[in-house]
Length: 256
Image (cartoon, rainbow, N blue to C red; front, side):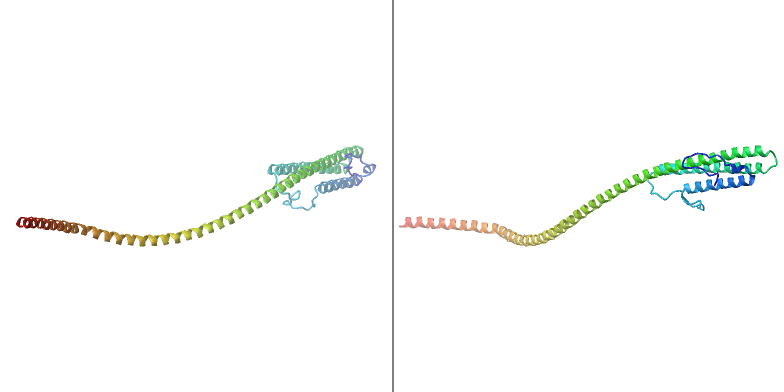
């Protein structure tokens, strides 16, 4: 841990004097730095080291905007690729330092090169940690903003549900009133049908009486010519009788 990184201040400490004692000690220090890098990287992501590829980077959040979620996923993917490249470079630097220090060439030049490589390695780790911290803060701000949008959307949905429930209650009341009106109209229609049937019976009876009366009238009208003929005949007979009486009266007067 002697070659650890001050993440809070963002500084890159110089290698300690113990690194110049032997190549094995330098190798152990580099191993410690690599382990610290891995721990900082994984703990900054707040997930277990043995997570599966299908495990999401952040907890599941209700989908509010598809474009914003895709943007976050793209940024996380780019961040992971950048981090992987930096880690690969750090491991190559560490392997180069170890192989160079274990050689039989100029030890002082190897030590200076090791110091320089170690400084570069620490600076790389520091830049990675700074970038991770900045990205995590940005993600937290975006998640907070998305949570606020989600809460506002939930409130709007609840208000809409309340209005819909009120509308449904009003519609149910109207339907009940319509059912009552329909039942009343059905009763009135039945009463009207009964009265119409009664009137039809009365009309049928009146029609029968009228037919009988018309038949009697027609029979009487048919008898009118014979009655008139009889009256005419009686008038003729009476006129003849009157003439005879007048004649006989005159004859009697003449005889006297």
